[in-house]
Image 1 (cartoon, one colour):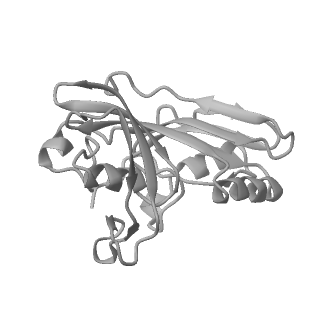
Image 2 (image 1 turned 45 degrees about the vertical axis):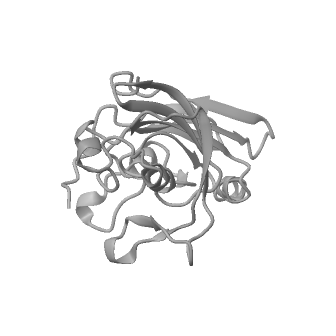
Length: 220
């Protein structure tokens, strides 16, 4: 098991805040919520709660994934935002750098997923008992045997984007769970960033859209 060494700079990156909610930019290497081990207490949620004590987590990003995440500032807002996620009214998009040069410009990955219990938290494709999982992808560019892609998860399964890209032969670079050796060592971190997030403000009804630019040193 890897030692947990979350980044401390920036300690908390607030993209947007009002009386109802927060939109945060999570760095790679930081848990979204505390782990069971006391050594894993540091997380985006606990950091946010040091400044906004009432903040409640609505959804999560994998520890190795960076990018946009929304938190609620009251139980009622939490309920309304959670309902939007459950009914797929929230728009999410990611940027990833993957192994291999994609030949098509866009496509869909429709493969059912389930937890690989003996190897959790890994997930796997399972056509018998897996839950329906759909990812849409669009190629941004290709260079030096790799591709930059925009990923849109229609469903929200754990590790969905990571498993789906590996399943079609294009694992995300730096993925400690699913990348083969060459793809793993091709980057110092998982090159997956939550770059777009859109939802309806639970109190005003306004459609909010946020973007976050991934680190250009690696995502190009």
